[in-house]
Length: 186
Image (cartoon, rainbow, N blue to C red; front, side, top):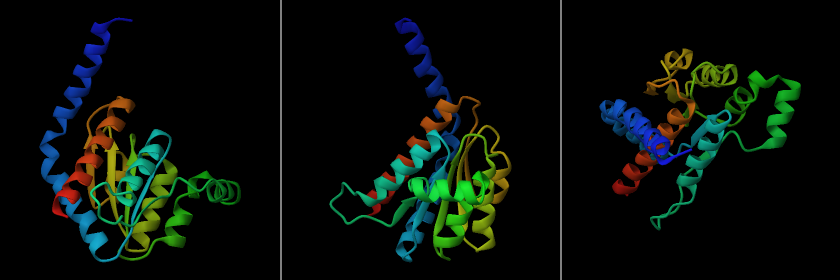
């Protein structure tokens, strides 16, 4: 345990951040898509598993609890209702915990935003498929090569890394950049 190890960790994070710089235009397009959804009265629905579930909750809170003095925007994390998640997991299976929410609460004009480091989680694939079936657009923040979720998303931001922690850190940074872009437009 030494400072060289810490310095190397930051260097690796910087390398991953530099690897996504060419997706700046994509983040602007995603920000516009979020704003269009909100302007039409739609809701941003965020979802993910594990650390990505925590990111989904964090980013939904960024929209609801505005620091700019403006009123909050309509954003929800599908990962927060333990009664719903455990009932769906028990009655329908873990693969359906998010799809059942997409089918029950999301409406045309809403936007599903998926966070996944692999792009291969069965419950997220089911949620994306349910959204597409209901003609609800999907934006995905993915890692590695994007996985199968890339093919189910209208807009896909991919962090080209195998390191789960670095992928999640860049996803969160990208989402914070989008929040800032929307705040700047306010």
